[in-house]
Image (cartoon, rainbow, N blue to C red):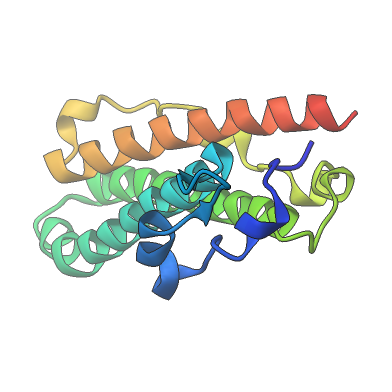
Amino acid sequence: MGLPVSPSLRRFIVSGKDAGRFRRTGARTQTGTVAMSSSAFFLESTYEEAYDLLIETREYIEKRMPEVRRHASHAYKMVISVETMRLTTRLTQVMAWLLTQKAVFLEELTPQQAAKHAYRLGGQKICLDPGRVDYEILPIQLRKLLERSHSLYVRIHRLDQQLVAAAD
């Protein structure tokens, strides 16, 4: 099942630079009210959420991680590295899935194509695992990023399962 939206709304599904316009605009109905597809808005708002989390993660890794690692033991550095990789894997998988759904919405892929293994949400073994380390030993900002990425990944995983079931 693709994201159901009328062709007149398709032009409002946008990439980053036009995202604000999508929220402010919609298709006028015969009565003059603005109609927007909830699935289209969901796709765009979830993409923005994932993108913002990705940027926040990048900034954390670039600016805070060197300081944390500088004073850490080798064992602690390993724990931090594993959890950071889990974080980036979740975000990479979510972004890829959202871009696939956008391609379905824009009719660049069919729902059946998107349901194939190559386009599905990957990394479940790593990404659904909340981790085996006591989170209390991790820096608080990293813990928050891990929690948010896990929540986002779980939501997208449920959607992926639903869309595949609907495509069958």
